[in-house]
Amino acid sequence: MTRIVLATRNHHKAVELRYFLRDLDVEILCLDEIPEEIELKEEGTTFSENALQKARIVHQRTHLPALADDSGLEVFYLNGAPGVFSARYAGEPTDDAANNAKLLAEMRGVPPRRRGAQFRSVLALVADGFEEVTEGACTGRLGESPHGMNGFGYDPVFLPDGFNRTYAQLSADEKNRISHRSKSFAKMREVLRRRFAIG
Ligand code: IMP
Image 1 (tube, rainbow, N blue to C red):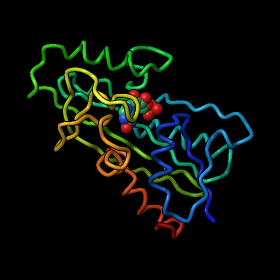
Image 2: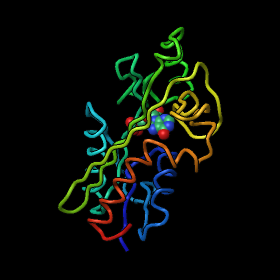
Image 3: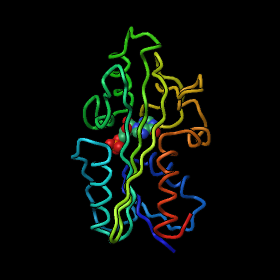
Image 4: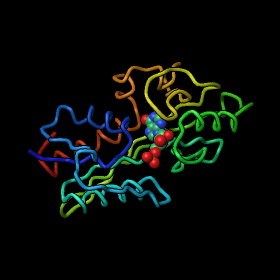
């Protein structure tokens, strides 16, 4: 059976990626299950550079196919911020509540029609002899205040198009049907089918 290592330390991302991989004939490993300590780095200026960097590090160390996600929220009024800095928008270490508070403060008084935003996810798969990258986006708008308890990150402040609820007010199934990550994964599913005959 094909084994794939998830190159992430974000528990929520790992849960979502496992959900997308659940019906495939593949053994999924987390970084916690790898005996050696692997430090993930994100030094790029784009989602795809960062996703590739994480997947390459894990593949080099484990010699297994490695799947990484780099993602974030782009607010059009803020010229794409927080973008690649989404995780550390309010500083380090990552603090979701502080990130949301900072973003809502930056957007205070901005009218609904100018609150458009999109989540983006770039997935990178690095294995022996090849590298593949896929992308997905979900457009929507920023709320005025956080709502909902599900999910993680900016979920409580993002209302996807077609919904009057935030990502954090959707069930995991609902989010996983429409999310940026579901779209990048749909393309990665085709890659897995082509490269490993799974999917
Ligand atoms: P990364 O580890 O650099 O890819 O950081 C991604 C950051 O973007 C996370 O820490 C979140 O703040 C945000 N993010 C990415 N995907 C999601 C999502 O599905 N929901 C909410 N926030 C997300």
